Amino acid sequence: MTTQDVQATLSNARMGKVFSKNATDDIWDGNTLTDTISGQQVGILMPNTTISQVQCQYTGGLVAWRIQNAQSLVFNRWGFGSKDGLACFDSSRIAPYSINPNDIFTVYPLPVDGTAQQTNVLAWIQTTKGVELFEAKGVVDGVPTAMKTVVNDQTLGDSMFNSTLGSICVQAEDGATVDEVTIIDNSGGVVLTLFGGVRGDTLGAMSLYKNLNADSLAVPIGKGFQIKVQTTSAP
Image (cartoon, rainbow, N blue to C red):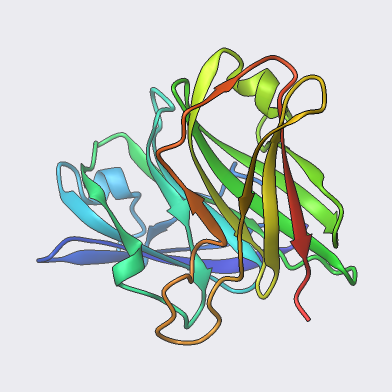
């Protein structure tokens, strides 16, 4: 399995700490970032500290991050990172969060797909049942491809049945375009289509983290529903 260096700053207006890990691609397990000075996890180093910013950077491809309670396994905050050297302070703001002593900061990186005209894609999907990370690897240009949960390899309908979809946040690998994301019902009908775009690849761009960010949605999710992504790989 491949690896890549991932770094993150967790901060507020008065202070911040840097966390890092040579993370293994395509897994959550073992990818807990620790402080670059003390080697401590975030919950041990910054208990009860309120943070309002998470800047996460990866070497190449794409990466999702989460702040998770190691005991309850609840995701308290989550998001995507930017390629190393393309940090955007404004885009990395989060809703203020007080770190629990049991919290850990973990990442799920993917590399750039090595095959021409194929793209790796991640999506944070939030419903009334909670939030889950979905992925589609090796998406062929122009071919709508089903996204499934990273942990259990489930479709949208299997994982989020009998809930209401509230938001979809998508990140594709460096330079790729998310042409569209569609929600498909159990009969193959299109419930919703959303157009995406390209993440910024120059300093100062505002879309360094997301190819698509759709919130304030209210789509009822039924059994057999799927979410599909269509992409165009980096030129």
